Image 1: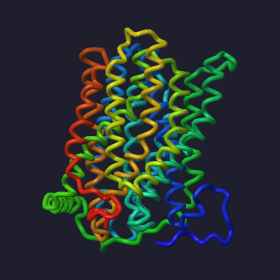
Image 2 (image 1 turned 60 degrees about the vertical axis):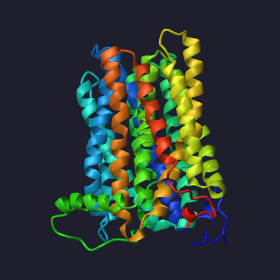
Image 3 (image 1 turned 30 degrees about the vertical axis):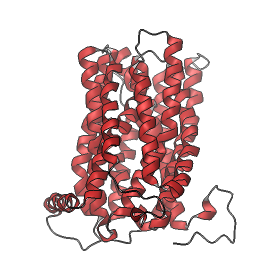
Length: 443
């Protein structure tokens, strides 16, 4: 696929190098990442921890555990829905509808979070689970559109740009939320901090809606089959059939096994970072600043991963990211709450910056590597299986951290389990075919 014609040069970075469909697909990452930054990663964690601990009187370790379990439950639900979503979105003319349905589910439930009384901490978790399932279902369908907007040669690059734009798109609405939160914490504004968090949820919803227009207008489904009766039953039959097909293709089986393990680690760290930081005594303001800086570190690093993958292949760069996460887990394992606040803050900064260098790259290149090695006419079904692995992948790490936190009330011990996941993934990934230019797997 040729890059977009550039009769009129755009001031937007990289837009001139993309087709209209590619740029519209990339821009949706910019749009939806407001949810990831404000709800999934930062503000909701702070909101829930204050609601559960300060208002309801739940211990910090228990609140961290409950938050971890809510993430586990949402990922199980998303994993169970993935084959149904994959089947429905694989029918001609249905993919955009399924995409819109789950986007609406995420948007409405996120908006609802702004109005639930903080003493209803359990209801807050339930609505959070609904919003998380909505976002997960929406991004599952979004990933499959990558096949529709670009070709194999450009897939690594377009996928990496999606994550790069997403980091900035997630950071900007977060920046709009930060001044209010910080001014309230400093006492410069006479407002309850919980109200400031609620306003942030509304900002996330507005941003998500505001920039999804180009995707809805320009991105369309190209591959799909005819609708069938009994689609729910057939969706699970199909995922079983695709699973049997994959089991006969060693390269796909090995990739998915490794992907399941390292995605579990990545997803767990994303979802538990703020709750973990709160549990070891990092201040709210420090957490906000650290996560914001991480976004701006992640953006250029995602682009660098995409560029380097064109020379060294996605497999090599994914290996680099896995090794980086092993270092992250090693740092976190020694972040005992008994250490001084200054030491813990420095260690948390180091951990976050390392995560920023690898997070976008490993996710973008995993998506594009898989997209390049599957048959295009079955891309929705194969991505359905990919997303089953992806959604269930966040179960192990969050469950380990939650269980350890509830039993020992020492959340940093749970990091040891996550490091094992990365090590196991690295061992399996060694046997995945290379896609370095010039190799057999690059075709």
